[in-house]
Length: 370
Image 1 (tube, rainbow, N blue to C red):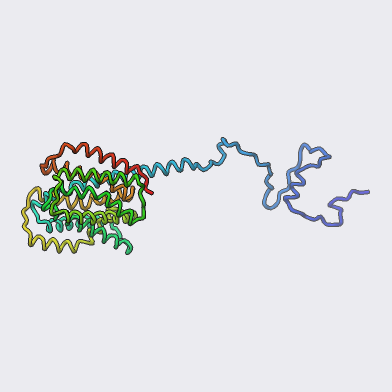
Image 2 (cartoon, rainbow, N blue to C red):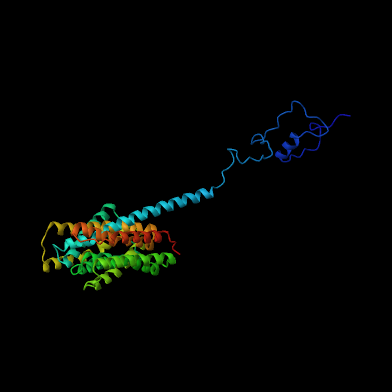
């Protein structure tokens, strides 16, 4: 009898899944040995079916193994970036403190040539011209509507209030006596910042802040003889105005560049300061001198614009409470400038007070804000 195959079979052969057919043909039956030269599997329209091999485990040290996410390394990089940002912010805030420490000596010089009202108005007009030039050169966009209330607080506190009140105080008080209130400024700024932003510094922070303020207060009172002057009311009002401006400016510096915060505040006050300059120059005598012009230029460019620019940048990096504690060194620096520029005598207790203040600053910088 003739063997029946596909050529003579009368029933058609069902065509199944090509992959199943390939697998069935690729594996020889267990009862018959494999042929030494097996024919290549048939190819379909899509080409030969890929051979399936069992997946082998890749050893962990193999170069082809996917790298596991390096969480510790990523955390270390983020910590390093935060550390560098904190150091940079501290440096900027320190530059701001140095610029502010020259404000009282510069104001004392300026009062040799100008009256208090005209000095403050002209100073703010010059600072606004500098800031406006920077804003135009950078093509800075107008602040958003939500920023203008905060800019108004900055303008009222550090552009108008603090310069005017301290200048009026310095007509009757010395720079060393004015440093009494300036020594209390860090504590006031930290308190207002905590109320404004909801940040609650630790007890160690507050203890060091109060201790530093007490050291500065005691030192500056000793320098001024421990007596109160008629300008104390101006100084305490200036303290509150400046602390409010610092706190609001530090908050705005998180959304806007620091130089734009003070720049827009100065520009916003320009019409008022122009009118004040015109009235002040008309009614107050002006006697131009080297000291007067130098003091006016520094108060306008250094203290009002450059100082506040780096100060707000630093405060945005490290926070208002910690940045404010760096100002504990400002009265001591002011006294040093007063000796060098104004000829005042420095007490022998200055080195001890300086060391105590530096210790307080170190403690506040390490204290965690809770």
